[in-house]
Image 1 (spheres, rainbow, N blue to C red):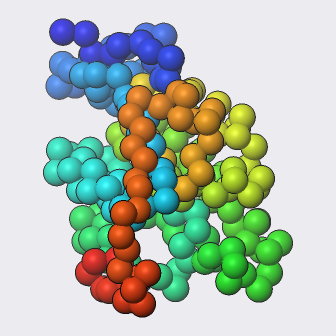
Image 2 (image 1 turned 90 degrees about the horizontal axis):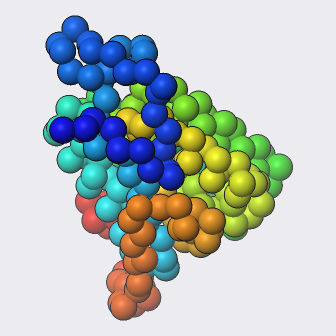
Length: 205
């Protein structure tokens, strides 16, 4: 069975060698996936984009994968349940935003944080150390022109063969949708908040 299927979304090392276990590995001795990695996009105006990604996070952890999460909008003030879970499981987690843009008191700082988060994300993706990288709400950095969409596409296209990526957030760029393997659009039918019901711990966060 081939261990790497070469596709347009991911690159593979020029040479693969057998690791200590005998399983195929790259030049750094990291095991190769049995299938090529995938790029998933969760977008749309409905609830559940990040929640779906964190469901995959738990599944990946249960399969022994190395997982990294980079959050682009949420700030350290958020004490979300999914972060508590990640800490419990030993999953690498970076919360690098400073909250919603409409709540910002210093847009220069907000933009700088968004760009810093992207720099961290590109390093994590390019490292080849992770089986799954979740870019939570990264789409807003493109929507607001903090990060060039071409840079995002390049980082995703040129990611190591083992590294699966999940992109979440509204307004997913067409350029990212075009290269993704799976794209899901969440559509709001009803939302409790429209009836004045606030976010609930354990459901929304």
